[in-house]
Image (cartoon, rainbow, N blue to C red; front, side, top):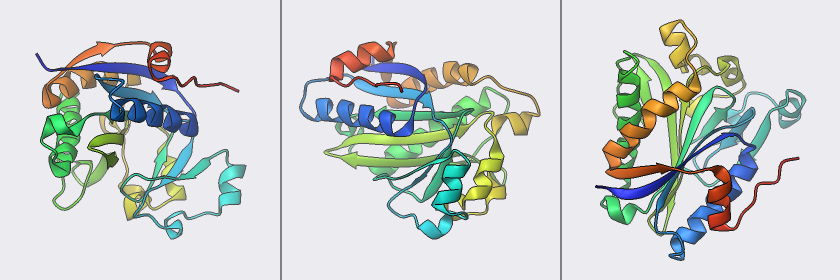
Length: 234
């Protein structure tokens, strides 16, 4: 039996509000007020984020134009470069105490990749890693991006798996420093629409297996009550 992990299927949440929720969970874990690991699965409205290794040059339009297109923009503390989040993309934020997983960041990254590779395999998709690069690939197309932040051996941020998202938004950026055409999705590969809930259901057991977790699904409201942060919807 693995370590208990709360899993929250949070739905569509504004990026900044979700980040504050992550930070609240992180703080409670750091202070020892929350023993369980937490994985938040969600989607974001159209949002571009830039990580520590990113450059504004990788955003191919001005910030004003992004606003006109209804795309939010945030500079954040995760690793990696520029990426896009939006509806139809399954985003996972594992907030794990990595002292239980060998205190090895590379091992953790490979573990996240393995979760996605195993999940895609259940859809009949053979995915793989690319040497020297973080993320998950299908032939020469990238289907999932990974960017993490670790403090006090507690992880934040995580992965973004393209399920049925609008890939044209990637034309606004150089995703992870590459050409926008490199990005693909499960729906595009299979040439049929795949429901994001189906992907969630397959991903959770793979996450549990790879990281030796005992998942327990809880509501977003229960998680919020445990960490003292309430999302306020406008």
